[in-house]
Image (cartoon, rainbow, N blue to C red; front, side, top):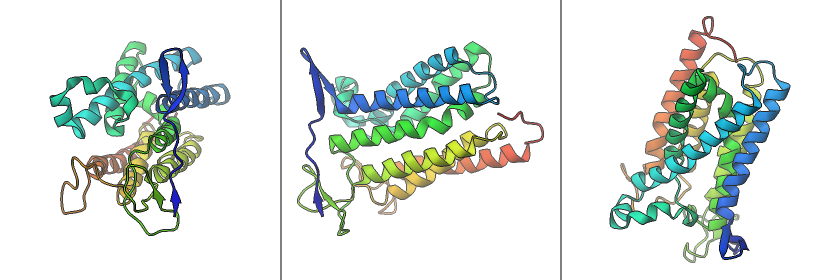
Length: 267
């Protein structure tokens, strides 16, 4: 058993403004994604013609999708009563409260709009971006840990951690589990998978499959949101309910990709 390292959520101050670690982690995620995709463009000959200039636009559109979609998704999926009671809570991003599933929908919509602008397939865009998304997820989970939010269920495992707002019993550091699985493990899997030409839809499908599976499993260690609890069967959480369709859709996309690989363009 260990104690949560009491980290100040404010990283530093710029005059009257407080710069939060949570926001910095998002910046780290976006910069990391840009850097790795730029590396792929420079080193690879099968990226379907994306340029560094387009990459900057892709990251900008994706960032808007993450922030707008992630916050809206959280308020709609997890905090609807709070939103109705005080709509201004929608803008208090520094307090935490971002939904991956909402952010994913936001990114898909943003990339679809950008693909229309540059006259390219949105699937080409998602196949291109998907391998580095776990880097952003990893940074975001570190932000969750610093905030002491999304902590796990009570455990007697030796690495259980006592969180300041989690009571007196040790809990799973589920934010770190998600950092390792949704972040590091997914990045390794997708990065190496995408190093060779794959049928269109395959990389995006593998991303959905891996995230849906990993998130579904980690939810067994993560404390359900207090305002929601379990949504069915006495064990199913909202996160699992939202992740299951991703897993199923990912399998379907992979099957579609490889059944039609003879007529698909390779990345």
